[in-house]
Length: 528
Image: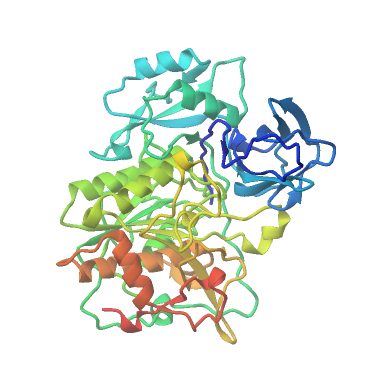
């Protein structure tokens, strides 16, 4: 399951010494590409402060890039190359070397599932007509919906979700590569787009991780038993709601369903129809693991079904954004019910729009903020099938060290406090171990059962589910309990994350490296 968005910036140089090199002193520079984010096959340009010769070497994530050419540019050179198609999406380190001269930076590759159009969030008070007029002057146009709307309200009263979502494309007959489109859009819409940290992006049907197969020799897992949940605890998640942005949640009697919504079929909204996997279900199984008395963690929590992914498991980015904002609006309108946001979806490329929305709800709303739980991804076992660093967003927005990327200082994406990134463990003959498919990296906070974990299909029959998608809602249920337990002295999402990881993980159980298990297995031995 994947989605992705991007933002471009003009090339710039930071910390460069441009004095004459008569004595042959080595040059060291930080550089930014133009566009800074580009899709496979797109041409990218980067300026270096020395005249390049025949021995210039350019690497992306350590891989030498072929077909590089250089042109004179002032006292230095402009280096041009095309993004190879065999790279993972996401921020990849870039380095140019020639003799003792060195320049380094970062290029965010747009990976699988990217489209050819863009999304913008328009500030309240800015009309579609005024935006369309500015875009037309730059060779761009607003793309209307099937009903003719040029923008759609996101429904919240504050933050980015108080704006409207609009789709932008190049004028007919004048196609643009994605990075170039975004660079032009940013320039044309200056002052009109909600631009706290940059929220322009593509509108793809996402690439997505199909549910992986469990490893041979593993055994089914009951999540409640694996995390040592106290069956007689007075805390059951009452007074909390868990928003499941997914494929829908079936109307099972064991779930306390709240009125949801459907962004995959607005003409016939069916948030309680989960058709994923020809009846296997995805959002339903996630909801059960979060809030079912027999299989889940917080049986008294409400489930807010938000259908943003179709029956094939594809989640259009616009539907994901609208789904998250629906949850934000729910939290604003239901102050007496604390909310947890579960995102069992992702992409190898960061969504700037999703980032800025999550930053708002996690870090700018204090105790009214919404904790976020995100799946760490299922592609670790195939990471060597492409070059570069494998990321998984939005999970990679969190963690203990943040994004592994160098960003323009004006648009730096720092790590998001309050977002819990969750990997998966399976039950092997030697005990619980991190699953081979589970995403790894400095963004992983903890792990939970996610390989052959028992849950329910939409038809109310038991089945085994595999993937970090099913580890995440177990943690979401646990966060709902903590929200209930701290209702009288509410915590910010950041404080909740810190307390959660310090007190409710067991680093010895999986016996894995920190990049695989984070702080360890979710362990309710010291839970309320």
